[in-house]
Each structure stands twice: as C-alpha cells, then as structure tokens.
Length: 375
Image 1 (tube, one colour):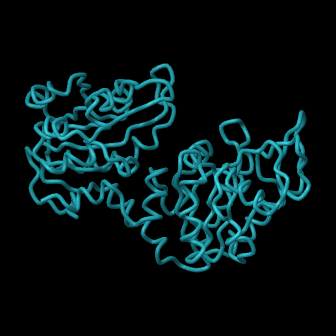
Image 2 (image 1 turned 90 degrees about the vertical axis):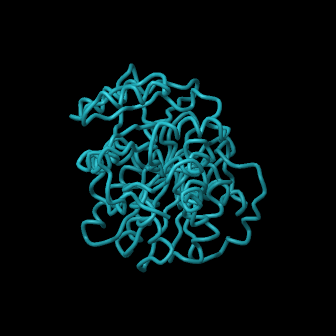
Image 3 (image 1 turned 45 degrees about the vertical axis):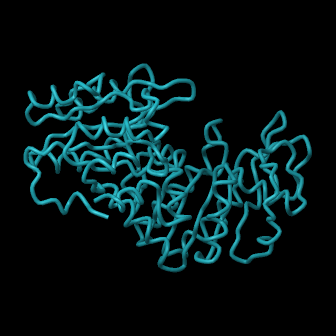
C-alpha cells in the first residue's frame, strides 16, 4: 500500500481527498467536530505542499441524507478557506480560480452510484483529481464507489490519518501484557468474532453493555425485558473461560431504578447499565493492565445511562497517564470522551466504529484491499 507521505512532489497536483465527515449536526450547527479536527493535519500538510485539495465525504441521519454545507462553514471557522460545491461536476471550475483553498463536495450519498460501488460514478469522481487519497478509515469497511471502485482510475494512497489508524490498531495483534479488552454496546453479531479472537490474545476480555445479556441468558440467568439477540451463538463454549469477565451487578429498571446483582434480576425488569461493583472490578483490571483496547458503552448510553461509561473513561485516561497504552473507538465511546473533553488523554482514539471492529477481527478492510490493488 502506498502512503501520502511518500509522494515527493505535490505542488499544483489535484488531490481527491476522501474524508469521513459524518458528524452530528443540529440546526445547521456541528455538535461534535472530533472527526473534522482529526483531518486538519492532512489538510495542513497538503497546503504546505501547495496541492489543490478537493474533499469529498458522506453524511447521514436516521431519516434522510443531509447536506455537508454546515461542515464547510465549520471548517471556515477553523481558519481554513473552504468553498462548498453543490454539484461535483463544477469542482474543477472552482479549483482552477482559487488559491490555497479547499473545496468540499456535497454529500456523496445523494448519488445512487456511491453505495452501489458503481464504476461509472467512480470514474466521474476520479476525473476531478490527479491523485486519490483515502483518509476515511471510519467508512473503509464499506464497498462504496468513493472507497473501492475509484482506486481503479487514479493513483491511490492512504492518508496520514489512515496510516495512523492502521499503525495503532495493529498493536492489538501483538500487545503489551497484561492486555485488557473492554467490549460494550450491542450488535452481538458484529462483535462475536472479536470475542472469539481476543480471548486467545488478551489476558482479560470484559463483555458489557447489551452484549453481556446474551451471556447471562446462556448461563440460565433471568434477564427480564433486557435487550438480547435471539440468535443461537453457542456461547456455552465461552462460559467458564477464566479470561472472560462479565458484569456482576447492574442498574435495572421496573418503574424505579435499582442496583441489583446479576443473579437476582426479575422477569419484569430491564438491565440498562453496569453497577458499581462492576466498575470496581474494571478498576482493578485497569490498574494492572499495560494495554487497554476499548470499544462500546457499558449501558444504554443514548437513553441517558451514561455514568458508569463516563467513570470507565476517566479510569482509562488515568491509567494512560501512568504509562498504560490505551486504544479507543466506537460512536458512543467517542461521545463519552468528547463529553468529558479528554480526547487527548489516551494513546490513540480511532475515528472508526464498525471499521475499527472489522479491522480488529480481520486485519484488513475493503478500503485497504482497494488501495493495495491500485497501481
């Protein structure tokens, strides 16, 4: 795979820069600019090299595709001259009359060919640049036109952030020990491969959040109305593994909120979060770890059950100050550290959620494979 930092001459070269600017926006205001801030070093690097920068990204919401125009305005507020181009076919006209300025194209997912990985659409995008640079690690597990097919039509490189993501996440394959892997959230189907893999690598794998409910069910425990996958994952093979850790108490709700031992849940109750004894268990493991990998919250974060996850973030940050290597990622995990304003307190914070999980499970991504095949 070729890297942006290895290109010697960039002056006047049109760089088609694929970013992941899929950030939360409310009333045309960017609510969390973590992913935007992470690509600023790449923009600065290219501007110093006097390259012409055409940026493209997607953005989505639960109900409709949104515009990237508020992100262009946010980038301007960061001190970067940014011109928003609604129709990507006008990008070349704009970039030829601008100096030391970046162009941001409208949401790629407005075009049907993007998510279909359409070669014709990829060829049209490629006609805008001389070199393609993938700086969108967080969406590089998707076989989309601006990630995969486009590499057939332009010399293609991994960007500075993309390279950093691979380097840091790859340390999990040969980590320092003791190694603690903390895995929370839901979507058991996507995270089971990580449990299988890292029970053979990590010293301890803590499974929390809604994921733990599947293990409680396998153990024959009552989980009431708690979120659980209905599929049979044959989890009995993991029960009793000394490396597997599960919550020992929980925040449950049935009209009122209670802290209960996980052995004493009733059929009309719902588990929403980890309890204080579980946090003490994690604190002990964190204090002895030399390497921590964390993805996913401990509770129903979006429903306001945040405190144990916030406490966990503070403990991992403190251990990092004491020399522990810490690698974090995942949407709600990012929201947690953003809420606490401690993004810089960890060894590395990945921009990826699903991409982070897939890379850790498989050691590669669709976007990586596309770059490796490119001439």
